[in-house]
Image (cartoon, rainbow, N blue to C red):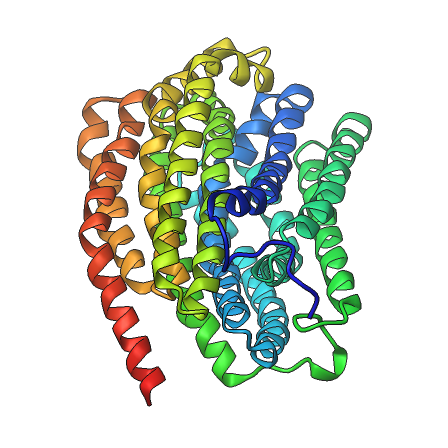
Length: 454
């Protein structure tokens, strides 16, 4: 195998971690551009109602994508452990298994999304004036899921090997294509919500095709060969052991947004539009922190495979510093310029902008709190520990948000009071995760050493 672009096992930690994470962050930002292009073009050229239709689908889309998207995390952890241990035969089996599992799951997600679209929009009480457009967007969007999951698996294989740049290049191509197609379909052909969804559909399959072509051409462990395409039982189990809890954790996080989105919907279309635009600000920050968390997971995973446990402490400290500082800087920028940014999406709807700015006042400036929780979770995943963080997420974060929407919001009906639940829930999760981190790590290392002794 050719030498990995980033050496995660030797030397200093901070510099290679930053080098590896920069393409990850840029990749996350480009993925946000998919969503932001949808929102910006829909709001500016198709109207506030079109933006509201797309935004109203967000929580449900995130639940489904997150539930099955945990597969990428499972692939990344499994492959990074293989790389750290220097087991190239195992890496090959991981790669070929991952691609097949991703394709199968993609079609499962497609079917689930299609069958639940109308029910979900009804349950979330989407306003009548945007109901049909929201369902239309969902039905087209979910057709892209096989491509999205295959891209996720392929990109995870490359990142686990130390290559975070190639997936970025592919997403740059797809990102530009998404913006161009959005403009053509919505501005030129006046397809409104349908055009937004079609642009996403086409470019998701483009990114999947690019990563698969690259893997087929990659003549080294981790590359894909048709003759080797089969699912190895042990690899499926390993990928799902990490991936399913990670997916459940992310899905529960998205699920906790359902009562919040339902509460937003009760405030009318302008509130829905403003909230949808504001999500882009917070989403930009969260994407940055989640991308940095991926870097922590890969670095941790390789060092776990190499049994360099002391080095993992440096990975945790460096990742925490980078991520918290990113949250502080980006959060302040988003908060200070919230009216101007939201106004780009809703230039002719000042009332909607005010709603969105109210949400930002409760969330954006405090996103750095989430960084502590996110990095601890990312580190645990690198060890292959995924179930306990998922349970913590369900109890401390989701439970709190459900209770807040049910008992606090009815007497304080504004986006500001609704979204105060975000920073308060993060504080609870940080405290709980700090309590469980060291005991879980010690138990995992002890178990690994016992197995190695046998």
